[in-house]
Amino acid sequence: MTSSLVTCDLCDAHKGDVSGQFRVLLPVFRDFGAVRRFSGPVVTIKCFEDNSLVKAAVDSAGDGRVLVVDGGGSLRRALLGGNLGAAAAKNGWAGVVIDGCVRDVTELAAHRIGIRALAAIPLPTEKRGEGQRDAAVQLQGVWVRPGDWLYADEDGIVVSAAPLI
Ligand SMILES: O=C([O-])CC(=O)C(=O)O
Image (spheres, rainbow, N blue to C red):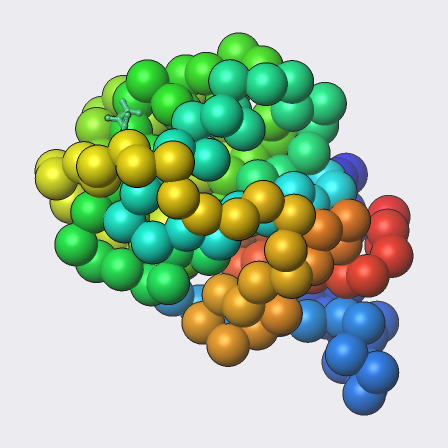
């Protein structure tokens, strides 16, 4: 994403979209990573208070993609912490967007990756191996599908079925 093209410009260009190809996530995601602006093709995970699949994803090559985690909005367990955030940055993920919580906030703030989530909570998950990868998911009621493109900056997060920049 260049500095002159940001989510506001994308919304100006697509505000009349009624096809559902262009979507805007609700403004409930807080910024936890060191990178404010990030974008890339989406990989999805759906899980609930179990981050086994999040760990598996960030331990593999990110190739500039954005990991979108439908954690069901749970405020009870952290789906990403300092170790998984470090792995995501090291393995080339552009960002992680979580409809759920993170922990190790100070560590996350040092990682060169975009990280958005609802809140922080110190309690980790139990890793039971449950969840789904590459499913269409909803974050706070907004659809995000594998292969969508996600653009995040200081103003918010938008998602599109096709690359916009
Ligand atoms: O492993 C976890 O469940 C989350 C965590 O604490 C970390 O990423 O450091």
